[in-house]
Every structure is written in structure tokens, then in C-alpha cells.
Image (tube, rainbow, N blue to C red; front, side):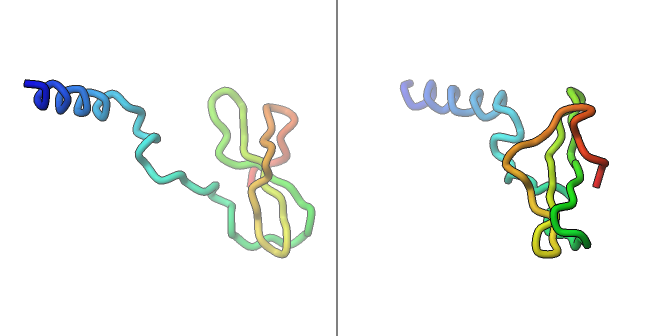
Length: 78
């Protein structure tokens, strides 16, 4: 009985967990693509709240910045 209860709890936990918890984290669409001007910025993967991932051109490739941006503080889209 204890095994059945434990299995039921695990199954329910998996069923109600957010899908992103088990999915591999996606890289931003622009990350790794070529860019021209070092230090140039753009934003990608904006959500409904207006929060975006800020990307910066470094060594000819777009790289994700540690700090994102919100709304009008975001650079143009990538």
C-alpha cells in the first residue's frame, strides 16, 4: 500500500509540474548567430510583461547578457 501511495504522489507531481521544469533550457534565438559591430545590443524572447533578454555583440557573435531589460529600456529586436 505504501508503494502505491508513493507512486501516486510521484505521478501527480509530474503531471502538475510546469513543462519547463523538465524541458532543456532554450537558448535565445540570436545567441551564436553572427553580428557585425562589437558592443551592439538587441533584445529577444520578450514575454507578455515586456521583459526581454538583452543580447550583445562580442567577438562577432551574439551573446546573452546577465541582465535583461523591460519595455522601452530594451534595444531594438534582434
